[in-house]
Amino acid sequence: MGSYQLIKENINPHLQGNKCILRIEGRDDVESALSELDSSSSPILGRNAASRCIPSASGTTRLVSLDIFRGFTVALMILVDNAGGFFPAINHSPWNGLTLADFVMPFFLFMVGISLGLAYKNLTCRGAASKKAMLRALKLLTLGVFLQGGYFHGINNLTYGVDMYQIRWMGILQRIAIAYFLVAACEIWLRNDAKVNSELSLLKKYRRQWVVVLMLTALYLLLLYGLYVPDWEYQIPIEASSSAKVYSVKCGVHGDTGPACNAVGMIDRKILGIHHLYRRPIYARTKQCSINSPDYGPLPPDAPSWCQAPFDPEGILRFAHLFSFVVQHN
Image (cartoon, rainbow, N blue to C red):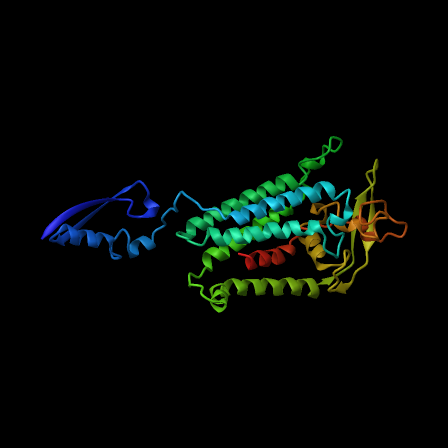
């Protein structure tokens, strides 16, 4: 019975440039040994290899259409950010409605979902993938707090940027970071490697993700329309004075989706604190709050009390809706 030491280069595309040595005993000829080396029962290529975390190949293939769409979205973002003030029709809708600027965020979320589906298509190690997703989400979250928390301020306003009492915790990058991590976790741990050959098989492949989407959507609707929103108040500092003017907002309703008495704002005020919300609310451009609507302007004489109240468009409750949106597009 022969004993051979076989050396074969690049037996696995994941091991480019390495040499793998395998000793096979009990074979009388080289051809039989080579057959054993290439067989699925090989300890290098067989079942044991599937259970190990093998690093992915260095070469990556990009989806050109996704890159083009990303460039188009960035160009659209620059357009609405710079021209929205001159053309309010393409600026964000003051409250209800849909404008060109309102497509930018959904486009970015659509790309996040597509990218996650492609990135974890050939997953080799769930633990390593989860660690990488957590690290990336943490980077986005930290960058978002730094950029949108108030650290960049005007020359005559040198106190707000370092005032933890007024820092804004939420923001666009924070929303993307949390949604990215949760969707990545679903894609990593709820994945199904079944083959897709029909519409029904596609639904079955992602049935676990659809369960998560339906649960979060139901939770979002339940909180939005089921929570009782009581009366609340807020303060606005008076210039050149240590005192502040107190405004009271009358609510006492369920399921209101208007600017003043919705459950989204109430949850943010209770959990985050009203001092940590966005201080230039989008509803300040509504007809009730601006004589230049749909642009910002002075308050009308009969403006309601909530017009100057802080409100965060990237609040806590929005994450459930945001997360379900990304899952549907991965």
